[in-house]
Image 1 (cartoon, one colour):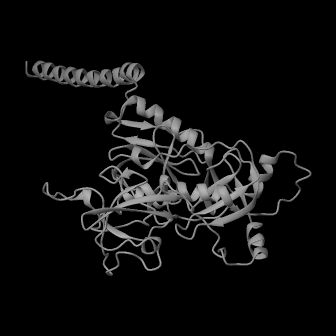
Image 2: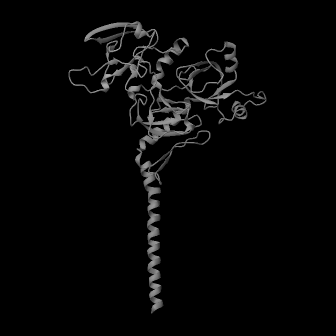
Length: 389
């Protein structure tokens, strides 16, 4: 009788265990074959957006339950689109037996390891201008023309189609440290530059690298450098902060929105700067192949950042000393125009300064030699002055 009872207990235990296992297996099968195929819900909360890039590196999104399916598609499209416009800079190598091998891709792969780039760049014009955070160490604006030519001859640029380009010239922007490389090309794919006003906290963005690696994050702080009490009219570049910080592998890379438009550049130390801030510089470069910035030369308080009672002006830029006691820079356009400490700039070309239209952002829309009309308040009287930047 005792043996019979033991057998019954054993059967019940085994039946319970197998029942639990079958339920678990059924859940997994349902998720894999029903949920995932019907609703594109991944098995373990992970979405892999790896593409067919050389190096086989791609984007993996953790916690995929929180990500909208449409965003996954947009992210993959952005990665593919961005890679078409990203190029890499290599030290030039001598190619041997070129005549005996008609397959140019094999020649390049033999001569260059595509992971050994010294820098990367992004196409900004269809006729071959490229922006990069990399500049040869020995290259600067003051060296002789012949020396520049010798340095330039030591580099090539390769795109993601493994096409090799010779470099015509390099122009260095000493203000930002970025350089502009010109290659002989036509119909290169270019990206739309996102204006600063269309960059928002909480916006999802992708950092994309030359080797196909991608990093998904969101903007948590726009105008990161905009935290001091006083501001400067000549602050050309504001930094942004991301919720998750890209590793050093992404230094020198580029940040896009999910429409594949260019938002920012990641510098060689990881700082992230808006591309819209570079627009005047690029316009100037394309116009006369020089880098110039329109400078006014004042420090100020943005009155729209403060709360006043109804008897005070709460908009405009109050010319105000910085930590060194300087309000109007010596020899600046502002000094020559007669602007002084305590003056309140009300408008530029009839654009009123307020919480939306900041002084430094308005100035970024102008180029060197543009004439602007400044209206300002002094001792409760309104004045105006014209300045050629």
